[in-house]
Image: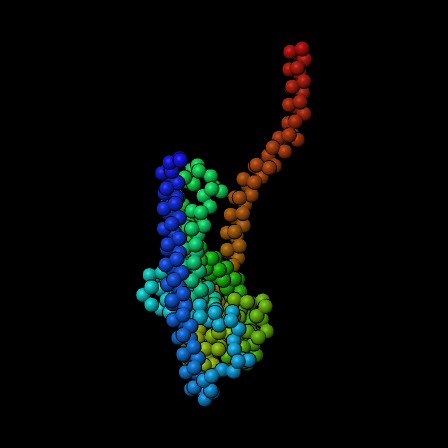
Length: 326
């Protein structure tokens, strides 16, 4: 009977530890799932009672199992995100990042972010350690503990990387859409429409050409219709894009809403300044592109140029040397 090597013993120990952690985490999830499901049922019963509806639901009107499970999962993740456990798993930076990602329900988004981080951080190390035979026994594959920590780190950071990528795309799109938004707002204000009417027209008619800003404006109009002030409803649009020009436009709209006054001239100045800034940005991009193309031209065109201009001379020299040697 062959003795087990130390690396194999370490692999078995890590695998057993990961399996135990998975079983303990699964039991904990099942317990929390049942508690959240019972709490959801109690809240639904109380809501129906406050609405004057009967507490018992008809059998033919039960919600689908998938939707009910999803609501329970969201409630579970929301409870964790709001408690001390969620404070440990989601730092303040992560919470603000999820809020900037453009999801309508930030509570639901935080719940999904937390559940995805937990699932990937627990499952990815187990998959990496159990998949060591595929990777071989050389290099990093010979250290299962290192592989486990690497899988845990990648699983922990993957949701944040995805959210950061989404936030970056939204910020870039908002910067491109801002000049059009200012021009449309100036045009609509010039024909005598109010701020609220202008924003409604932009949301209803131009959501295809301004998907990011129109979505944010729609949410701000919904908040304003529910009783929030103009400043409160535009706070998300002003703070979540890290754009000084957009924040200045939001402050201008709040000032017009509170104190009144003409807005065409400030918007025209904003539009002109944005166009000038855009021209400067394009010039800077052209300058960077020129530097990059210089390297490409040296690597691709210079050899061809040397062959075309000096190819005949090199061939003649080689023929002359061959005759001398012959």
